[in-house]
Length: 116
Image 1: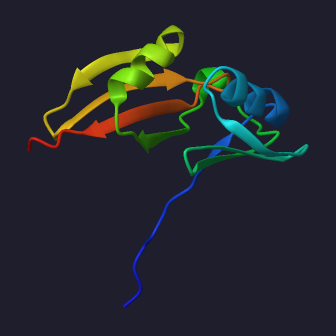
Image 2: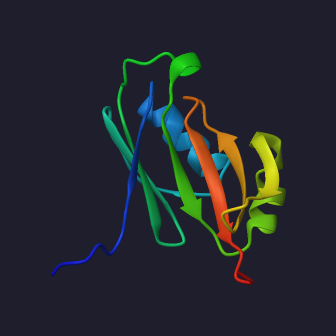
C-alpha cells in the first residue's frame, strides 16, 4: 500500500507577485517562481504555492494552512508584527499561533508538544 510523504499548501492570491513578495520580504521565504497566475515560495525545504489572480474578497477568504515548525517561539518573535492569533498551548498537544497574509489566508505555525 502506498503512503503519503508530503503535503504542499496552495493558497488563493489576488495578486500573485504581491503575495510572493510578502512571503519573501516579510516572512523570510525564498522565491522559487512567480508568474502571472502561479507562484511558489520555500523555506527550510517547505513549499507554499499560490494561484491567482483569485476572484476573492480578502474580507471573505477562508484560505489557510498549518506549517509545522520546530521552535514556535522563534517564529513568534520573527513574525510578531503579523500575528493574528496569539501563541498558546492547545489541548490537542500543540503550541501555535497564526498570522494572515495580504489575501487574508490564515497561516498557523504549529509545534507539537513533545512532552505528550
